Length: 65
Length: 323
Image (cartoon, rainbow over all chains, first blue to last red; front, side, top):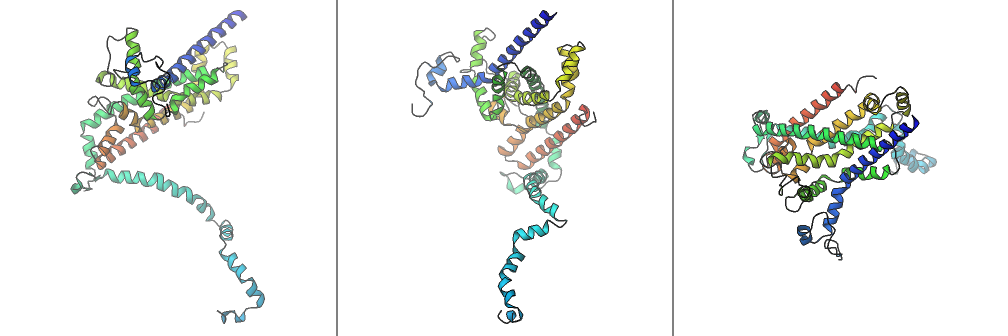
């Protein structure tokens, strides 16, 4: 009885974390993608796969770089 | 002056500046006034001035605008129009189309935002380790201005550069790039997705605050009685959140009806008129057609509809009843 309750609680916690992680990705994903895009050159934005990291370490849209 | 002072004693002359100062001292005057019955009205005066200048005057001015012809590009016809603008609104097919779009936009967005917000709030309310950080992340979209949110998603849903198209093609959901905002059948759905992303944290925040105020004993008693998670949600959580839900829905509906900015950035009301809502129609009428009179009439109609909605929703939901 106690074991099944603990198992049920564990499953509930796992489900809660999965839901929260999904919401976290949904919430911050677009912002992260925008941040990555802001670090790319225009050529990189068009040619590389969109979720990828910038191909260069220079920051074209930041002042002083 | 010297003659006037002849009758006064030297002591009076010495204390004259003091008595004059005392007579005109603003602190003394305020002290005297605080003893009268006018004091409460004086205290209310600053708030009254603020309300009149910020709320009442613009509202009355808006009503006055709606019964006038005010066209900046045809000033010769400007003048009193009576109810003509309202008759024109009634006979305007674009108004009815915009109203239909507004109903769809507001209803679907509010339902999606509510469901997402409720799910997020239920998960966050479990207080598991690390959920505070995720809670902050979940709330971030709501802190972004509509303009920023609109531009981010316009870029993400861009047919050439957008990450959404790229991912959907990679997983085989799409065969080729799709212009989501250029297709009348998908433009509204795409705009609703963006608004839902931007607005669901509002519901999450309010519902979570409401859930925190529900006594834990109720859940303990329900668990002892054998009530499952779903029964607890249906019989305890949602009824206890009734007032919060009503307030959140009314605020969100007012916000959605009154804000044309997101749709202005994403679609501009297009393609065709597929995403033209009432607020956008009023905005375009005022700032593109320069017809402020007709725009005023549209705004007054929107105002009346929102007032009616708020009244009807409060009555139907029963939040103003005792218990």
